[in-house]
Image (cartoon, rainbow, N blue to C red; front, top):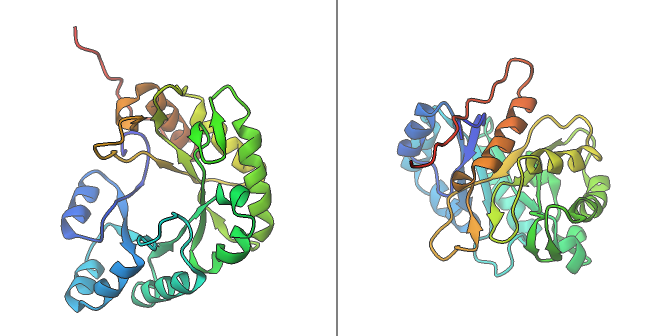
Amino acid sequence: MGALGANLVATAGPPRPETDQVAGTAGLAYLAFLSTDGIKSFVGDPARVAEARAEHNLAGFYYWDANLAAEGFTTPEAQQRAYTTLKGLFPDKLVLYPTRLDPIVWSPDFLDRYFRPAFSDLVTPYYYPVGTTFIGEAREEDEWRERLAVLLAALAPRVPAGKGILPVLQGYEQQGYPLSARFPAAQLIVYRQFWPDLDSAAVEAWEFSPGSEPLVELADLPTLQKGVCGLFAALGGPNARCRLRPTLGWR
């Protein structure tokens, strides 16, 4: 991820010195994940809190209620507890709650009931538009941009003025739905229709667990890697460069 131009990586586990060291070696900061239940056990262990405070590359945390059957439906009360607890212990760290977008279509009161931007330092919307999505199938050549724009049009008026936005873009491929190098930047263009000055983006690119065979991760997609690298280089300013080395096939 460092070679692709990222400066921050989100991990799937709590803060650990080993993760801190690996991230630092790669020239990256990292976000740790804590479930709402995990936060309770974490803050109840002073040694773990002190250990996290001593880390050099821990940029912050993201959280949600991992006990829910439906991802993205963490209650406002749970969001408030998680956010205030973590910010109280780590006031200088990021604390993020990802905002799922597709329920806007199939759960009409979703934003009223669950969208609470006060409990996330940045609004981090995500919807992965190409593949067999919850609101319909789409290929890269289809009208997924219009579908994403409808979701963002519903969200944007609810984002407080001055609140930072960190869109989480699709950085993987579903088998049968190929993606080009243009796809990462094309997603960001849609977000910039609503936030023209957007200068940051995240990409879902983690390694998939066994059983996720229909999904192909970024590490196995050289073409999509090229697109992500170009996206991060463009966001990084005039001196940013893509350090991706092309992968040579076996001969």
